[in-house]
Image (tube, rainbow over all chains, first blue to last red; front, side, top):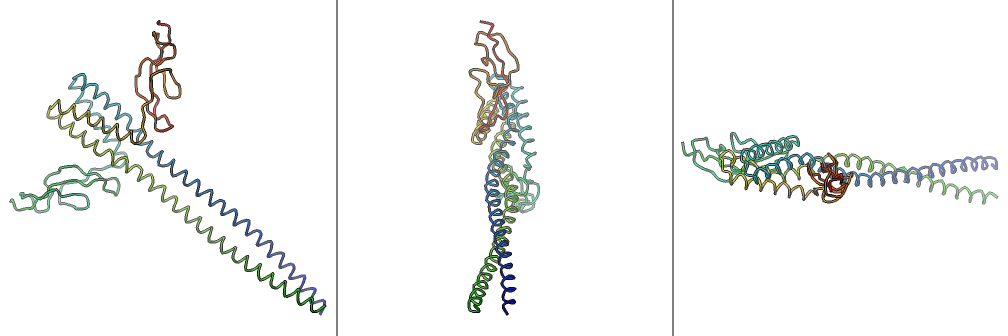
Length: 162
Length: 162
């Protein structure tokens, strides 16, 4: 009996030690993971700020040549050099459209039937075209990827003019 | 003696149980924190993508009226309505400059001494101005916040003309 008791004591002491070690290690690991998480969170917040800043920076930088072309066109206007002004404006329009197209900007199509997802009907008019057909575009619409930035403002045929 | 042994056994058994419970709770907590961390990481990656997309979207959307003004100016050019064209170009220039100023775009100052941080010297010319003074701007420079997007390209006085 006393021997048995001693054995049990030794075993239990060993088990206690193992458990204490395990617990201490777990506490260490938990503290480390929590610290990593906290650091990651802080870094992510910083990254997001600079990401937005850099996203804007890239686009703004691409627009500088448009500003340049525009200023030259304005100088031509001031000097009443009409041919140069017209040329300049065409250049500005092309470079701005190119820059925005590279960003993914697309015109909303307006040939065909009225589509409430991408069109806004300003009015409905009798016309020879089929009812529900877009017959005039008042203001162009634009989409960027999946998103409609602005619907096209259109006049729709009420179809009773044919 | 047997009583003492019993007490010790009971104490040790209690300690063992407490430790096992502590360990189990720590394992649970650790698994939860690790899962939270992993989810946060995934969400942060998704957020960053949509953040960049939305950052661009906002700026592109603000540029749509510039595109509109520009198209009207082009129509005036095609119709040879010179007064309307000039007016239109001035409008485009103002709205583009306003949009970019709202983004934080600023012209690099060029009055005063040459500053290699924001100026690029294209050439050096004798002039009555003090040596090292900017005497002509060939191309405007721009900065966005702390960052120089493009240095101003300038002519610098070599000072030996006075």
